[in-house]
Figure 1: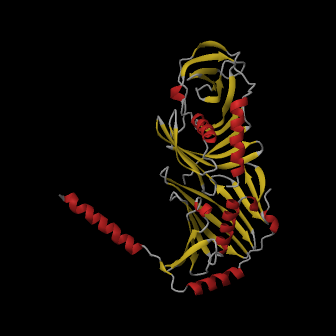
Figure 2: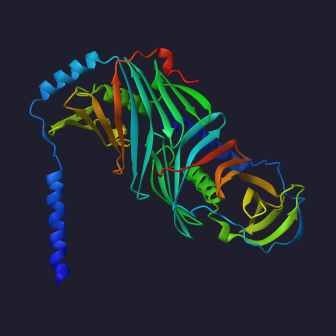
Length: 212
Length: 217
């Protein structure tokens, strides 16, 4: 008999504590004001350097895998993601070219040669800048909680929905910097990239985005 | 995602190879020396139920890379996921000894020819088929490491083995002319678990380079 009382009690305590701990998102009150401030912030960003933590859910394997690295961004179209743990891999977007260093080999591609690749690259660059609020490629729902803004973006292009069903971009209320980008696939698996130790407008030479 | 053209090339090559197979490498002259009565050892999945490999696939100068995750559910079933470094999934597949079931797959990889080759390679890479090998005999090949020949259905598996009975090189050999289909080379080990594995096909220009990685903190 005791267990029939204990189970609802445990469920109640869990629900109560999750309510207390959570900071639920609600519809954003001033979307126009948010867009204006985000745009204002974007105008001031010339470069961004940071570390990132990437969490990939593998529901099929019942696993989550975490990789880490560094990211550099320079206006208007240069971005370099360098994975350092647990593997070494560099992907650099450099003036319309995609440069990849993997297993010691360097390969280059024209980012426009593949529609999906260009789409994801553009998405990453725009998301890092927070420059997605007026995107024509997504339908966007704007939300907020006490500390952050959230843009829930759903691709409009049917082809893209095969790869990414939803993109969540979390923006700090403190400095309007992008804190997280989460891409969810059709299967429900997600890849969450969290940007930490963000440093804005440190001088970065174009050559730093080349891969040797 | 940069690699969809690559998949078309891979599929074409597999198709061509299946009708114009012309491997020259042969174990035909490998003479049987004696029966082999020891068990081949595999230390995959001995410490973790999931093995992760940073994986590069090269074919005809083109490359595809990602993370391969292989989970051993039991002696007869593997779960396999392959996804890009940035986390976008290529496929999830359940693999048994004689079949597989694609749970999901991007359309560009979803062809029988491509997936048959990939799944077969994965089975051998993690030595999933060890229990299906029969009639072991040592053979004389001229290699310094002892070589053991097994029957696997109607083909042969030749295995160069280390002193502690771990495979160093595994070759899939078929037909009356003993043609080699592919090699799996275990190039380095850590705590007896292979950490660098190279797969080379003879009939098509397909090489797979796997480096074991660990996502544990």
